[in-house]
Structures are given as C-alpha cells and as structure tokens.
Image (cartoon, helix red, strand yellow):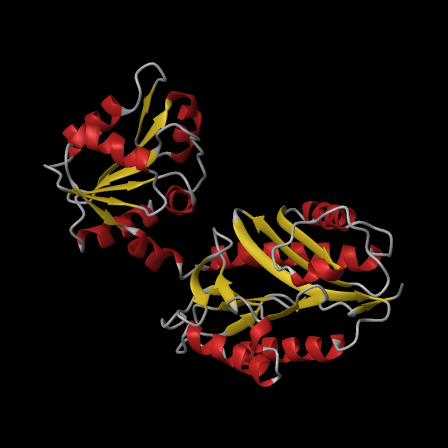
Length: 361
C-alpha cells in the first residue's frame, strides 16, 4: 500500500531496524481499517531494510486481516503471539538491535518483543508518523468536511428544539440522532447548561435547562473515521449580565485568529492572537485552555494551536480554533470552528452554520 511504502521510506532514514505499529489511529492510517485486538497482541510489523511487512493478529481477526489484502500471520489463543512474531522476524529481518514503537504502545508490547528478540534499544516512531498524518489528502479532507456538515445538522436540530425544562441529556440525544441521520457517527456530544457551561469538559447530565441559561454545545462526530469538532454557545431567553460582552469578545478572538491563519505561521502565533484579544478585554485568566488542536483520525492531534507549538502550520493540515471564557459558577462561552489549509495553500473554514444566539424561552 502507498502509505506503508511511504512509511518504510521514512524508516530507512532512521536507525530503526524493526517497526511495530499497534491497533489505533496510526494503524488505521497505514492499513486502511481499524482492527481492535483488545488485550491480545496485534500489530503491523515492518523490517525497513528490505521493506518486508506483515500483520500479526489473533486468529479470530483473520477475516479482517484478509480484507486488508496485506500479508498476515495469525495465532491462536492456545499458543499466543510469540511464534508468529518469531516466524516473521526470522524469515525477513536481519539481527535487530533497535525497535521503533509508538508512544501509545503498552508495556505488554515491550515485554512480548523482548521475549522474542532479547535486549534491544526502543526508539519512538511517533514523529515519523505525525509527519505523514499531519497533511491530509483530498479524500481525508472530504471525510472531515462530511463530519463537520453532520455536526451542523445536529446543532441545527438542537437549536430548533431546545426549550426550558429539557435536560442536557435530552438535547444530546437530539443532536446524536441528527448526526446519525446525516450518515456520520456521533462521538462526544457535550451539552453544558447554566453553571455547567463554565466547565469545558462537563458531561451531559439530568440537569434541566432553565430560562436565562447559557448553553454550550460542543460536538464531535466522525465520517469514514475522520473527525469534525464544533462548538456553539446559545442563551435561553434573557442572558446573564455581561454575557454579551463575553460572547462578543470570544467571537472577536475566534474571528481574528482565523483571519491570521496561513501556511507560514506557527500554532503559537495563532494562539497569541486569540489570547491577546481576550487578555486585553480583561478576561485572560478565564481563558484556560489552548486555542485549538488538529483533527483527523484523532480528535486531538497535531498541529496544536497552543502557546508552546512553534511549528509552522503545514498545507493539508486541519485544526480547530476555539477560544473560550469560563466564569466559575456563572457561565461559559466557547466558539469553535474547523479550519483546513488546502494542499494549494488556500485557507478554508469548513463550518458555515451559525444559529441565532438567543433562543426564545
């Protein structure tokens, strides 16, 4: 496969003699599908010297292995993965002293490999994989765009139906159903009302929405495994005092950050634009997270729009811009858009739907 060949080329420029990619987003990126082996050993294993590679999977996943059209070796629960790994290495690889692993690999993977290979130096392959995944091709961008459009359908359904007396969970279900009807998969659907809106990762509860509540709706969904991630803030009836001042400040930070996106600036620079506006407005201490994060096969991936991310934003990258202000015990405001820097350098805001902020009680 083209992506595996590209990864092998990158590995040849490193000192890695055996690479092990475990089930998860990097595996999905290279193989083309998720194969979750749960507690069992599973991997795409590669000897970059000669380009040989194989899936090592439990026998119960053999049907999925065949569907990938990649070489594979399966093992039974009665025997475990050691002989399968040994068979591949002995038949394809030279002496191995340096093994490349992902940071997300568990200690169990390390222990199993040491039982087969003996002592080795473990090296990270994360940067090599990030360098491939950070720039999306047109198919990937199209999947992200479909996810975004489905989320907009979900937020539209919430805006049309939300009323005092409904619970956060009630609104969450409306959103999830609309996303499913649009052909995407709802993931994290967060509806945060009243004082809960000041807690950025509050999970929906049985709290009933009241007149005067600020409601933050933060939704992720996937299409073809690729994420979209949008947030809108509503108010039910008459808002709390200083709500509009906070909302307009967050909107200004959101808009100015997007206006400054281009393929030659860093994530830290874009963060400084949004953070500077909120700080100058007197609410800097209430902006308690980064301005954004990359989206793709993971809901949080590179590039990061944060104070410490000093890398330029590459063409093909997709990321959120989501400044927020959170007043503990009162209310919060967050506005989030999804941005793509197209392969030709054009900057595109993928989301278009902005409902009326005030919902009549």
